[in-house]
Amino acid sequence: MNIAIASDHGGFELKSVLANALAEGYKILDKGPSDKASCDYPDYAIAVAKSVASGEADFGILVCRSGIGMSMVANRFQNVRAAICATTDAATVTRQHNGANVLCLGADVVSPNYAVEIAKAFLTTPVDESERHARRRWKLERAERLSDCSGLMHDDPEVFAAIEAQTKQEDAEINLIASENTSSRACREAAGSVLMNKYAEGYPGKRWYSGCLPVDAAEELARKRACELFGAEHANVQPHCGSSANMAVYFATIDPGDTILSMSLDQGGHLSHGSPVNFSGKLYNIVPYTVDRGTERLDYDALERQALEVKPKILLAGASAYPRTIDFKRIREICDKAGCIMMVDMAHIAGLVAGGAHPSPVPYADFVTTTTHKTLGGPRGGMVLCKEKWAKALDSAVFPGMQGGPLENIIAAKAVCFREWMSPEKKGYAQQVVKNCQVLCKTVQDRGYRIVSGGTDNHLFLVDVKSTKGITGKEAAAALDAAGIVVNKNTIPYDTESPFRTSGIRVGTASVTTRGMKEGEMIKIGTWIADVLDNVADASVQERVKREAKELVSGFPVP
Ligand SMILES: *Cc1c(COP(=O)(O)O)cnc(C)c1O
Image 1 (spheres, rainbow, N blue to C red):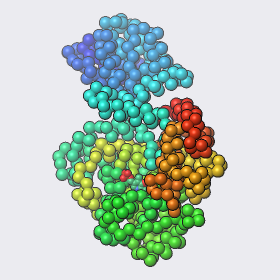
Image 2 (cartoon, rainbow, N blue to C red):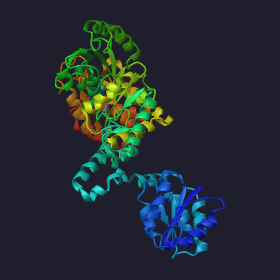
Image 3 (cartoon, protein in one colour):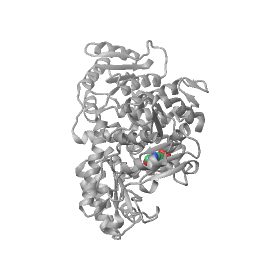
Image 4 (cartoon, rainbow, N blue to C red):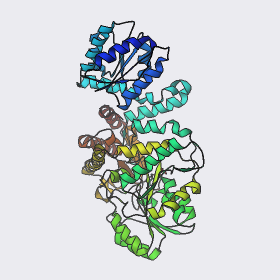
């Protein structure tokens, strides 16, 4: 077991006594100082806190005259819990209850012999893992998620208030918005980091500015991990969002006026796939494809006929509201026959692909674009994966083609997100998202609601509230919102309502699964959804569901 130890000049002698006494049985990492000359205690407390926070050391010991200054510094670090102990009892209790991992001792407070006894008590007492102590330690570390930005409380209380309100809202609601998720603290730390200070036009190793070694390292990690995670030949992690990732592919491959065959927006496509109000619809000749009227699923034979007739430059697969598995192998065949570029926008399903819960488009497609914040659960941003032969064209389309300096802080957070996906638990998460979605969907369906295409294979489903209850998606979403359940109104294939009213709602399970909810909770939530939609005008139902939902979410804290 490793113990990082340090002191200031006032604690130097006691530190030497402790290091000698503990050398038998522990590996001592002496973080200084090496003599009694006057020094600044924060420098040494930081060294020990870093060692413990990073996992280099299992425990830390810090000595100054009182132990107080040392503990103040160490406790500013996430996952460091520093305790000043003047008795062996205090050392035992703080280990058991608080899970303290740094012992702070006052050279003026305890004798050297007793200090050694305290240290031994501290190092040999196990943490009490019972529920109530675990819960309190968790609250301590989480600090209501406000410690991420606690400096703002003083520096800009108005902006802080907005962040606090979002934090509380996330805690209190059941978020079923299919395009949202909740990022990890590690992602948020990278996204809020000093990497945002750096201008880095260009790519790692070939920048237009000096001083890019640190951001080069971060971007290289993001590129490498993206390729490893998805089995891609090349990754560009600079696009600021999913729409700009798509723009980059168009710019890299075709000219204004060229034809793109893409899924129509009102059937589940995306704005950046050619909506007339979007740059994509303004610059390119967009031909939309649709789902089959009867099955509400893609009809690959019809798509093949259309591709052969239209002869697009790009066939774009992928959607924002398609609840079924997409057959990428079949789409590759169509592209080969039609002689066009195969582009897949996996923004919604990227996490399912990363976790093996949806077949990957990467082996088939020339380009795969994605966002990093939907099922992937990372920072808000975009990315393009492509075959090596397109790498150069893609990179110059992003920069200098359409963007200036990349957001290196966000790129670092993307790297963090990709690494999280390499763990087996995260792969299990992707499977759970789909299981949860199927149970939630079935619960609503069993209450008589028509589900578009009859069910779901992925993280989302669409409820046709119009044909089931004669209400619009807008009304349904508002009633659910009043009950603490957040979804969005959504058009369904061949919708007769306007996009502002819609006949459907879209429901997704990425965020609730991130909170740890499973099938049992999905049955409860599905029942509440049906209760509210059965009685959209009944405020008392909304009140009751809101109460019960609040109770449920309190057991599933946001990370
Ligand atoms: C969400 C989404 C995007 C765009 O994402 P932004 O980051 O909001 O630009 C692109 N394509 C699809 C299919 C999406 O669902």
